[in-house]
Length: 247
Image (cartoon, rainbow, N blue to C red; front, top):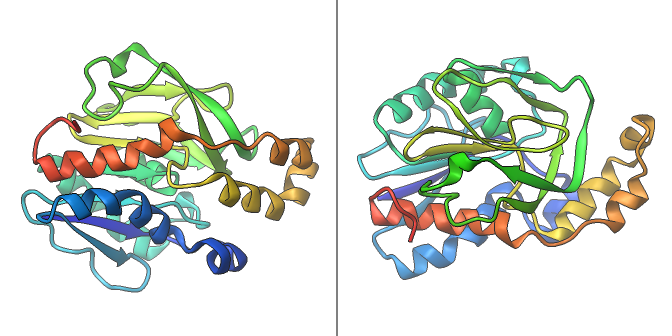
């Protein structure tokens, strides 16, 4: 079985040079699971440059990365992913969308994504989960509040009818959605480490200042986010198990 990392963008050049690109963050978090599950193969598909999305076999799973692109701009490569995501959802394949992937999954399944009216959210913030996580295969063992790394200008503005709201915070009512027993998306970045988050905030100093925020305070407030980060290994284990639990 394959766990596909669907790459939808690149990090900043200096972040890539020091820490790696988006797909490397995911591979680093999920690689140890693949090392102990030889039946699980990690693979990367760059949706912008690698042509049609990969053909998915039964037992495969997929993660859609973040991007500096915007879902509402409806670029051709991004729009081409929508029917592919719907097909994977209908086949009940394990799916996890992250940031851009979160917004794209929601839009593909009938929701709406676009610019958040309150502007950008960047930094380490707490996400509050709803009681809907009880018994959830991915989130069920998490605390009802945990810290997560966030950087986004767009959000899910209206979730699809099929989605259950699992998590929210003061900025965004749809931080975490579940579309089926093995399909989720999150606005936050479980793949980001604290150093990567600080680098992103450094790039966004001017934009955040213009929005009335204090970038230095946000940088000082960055912490590691082990509960959020652990979701990626849990998801990989879920794919490897071929079942509905990540244990």
